[in-house]
Length: 174
Length: 201
Image (cartoon, rainbow over the protein chains, first blue to last red):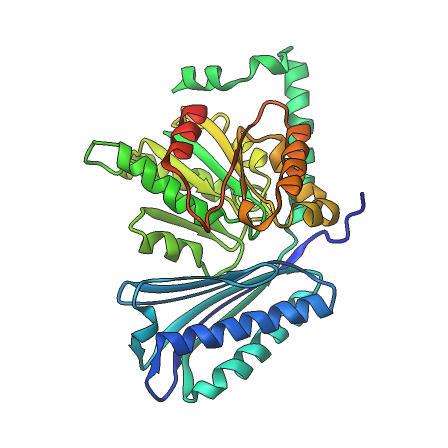
């Protein structure tokens, strides 16, 4: 077995969007599906692996959540979402993708945000864009190795068999 | 507090399955105090799953911008201490990031004074199991190998032969694990949650 990817890049994104006209929940869902599919296709074209891409919008307790890995995005929305009217909304979005560096992912996500949001018109306010580069997998592996080593040293030092460490003992400590 | 570590690779359906499971757990408790708190860990700086869970009426604490299995373990300990002092719930579910190794979290919490039991539930993405096992085996196979319960999700997206093969792979990695085949998309039978609780309680 080969391992093509070792760590993902992460891009988190929160923007308040004021379209400048009234838009429906259905309009927002449609735009977000296009945006997410565009980002998925970019990942496929570059032989990257999509961890996940998620978008979330909420207004007055009504929610829209779209998530995708490969294939058609999953859409979860409150009943009646399509007909809700918005003059502004906050969009939260996260993309975690194996392959590109953080800047490449960030550029791709922002470009696609602008591409798909611009037809709604208006402007973005209270702009918050945050991108982080993950290096999670190697760190996790390294820490697991260190923990294993420390545990083995302790077991040896105190002459404890590994089978003695179980949930029953933990329950007794409470 | 009994801790359930809710793991699984990115996009496997952790949050989609956690919502009905958490509601099932809350529904069976009769005491007035909060019986369940979810600690939501996300590696991005902007959380999404916490908002989804809160919108479902669940009690959530957030740990963002890092992974509790390797980067935020001290934040997790602090969070658990605060939960004990403020809410003292019967259950705490830690929804790990999609790149976490749940056993690292379990090791971190193994000697925590307020925790009476720790169990690990890992979600497997049936649609991508073969692809992910090939491309990033450590991140998908290691969590399964240490799980108490595995939920093979998205079974509506694979055929019976492939599903059988996935189940065999999971069993090969972990002989003693309890396996359930589910689809968050088509809905989960309440009996499944009853069985899962029985297996981790």
